[in-house]
Length: 116
Image 1 (tube, rainbow, N blue to C red):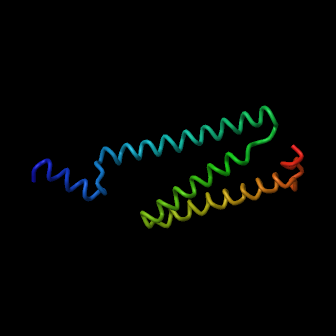
Image 2: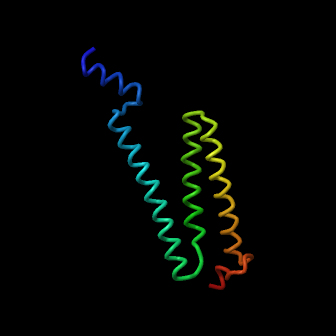
Image 3: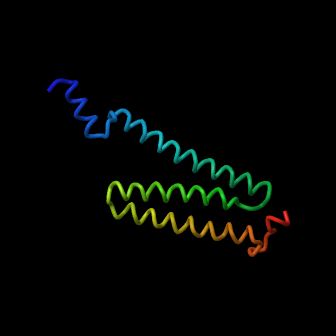
């Protein structure tokens, strides 16, 4: 096999993408994950400093994003571990969503959106 034939076979096996493309996407996803984690932590710290409350919305979005990522990994890889991790993150997402709704409606002892 020539070098071009090997590269062509590799592209066919990897959905038309080079190994370099796949590695770049993997690195980008990892950087995006840790960046979003850092941004959520920063927003929470700033929120705590200025309001003495932690931003539930930020973590709600973060855990929703992670649960979707692990559900996609489960669908693609068919590994039960990925499903259990996805379900764990999804439960956290649902709990944070309920907390957020309680905050919006004022049932948590805070101010309502209309009263703010």
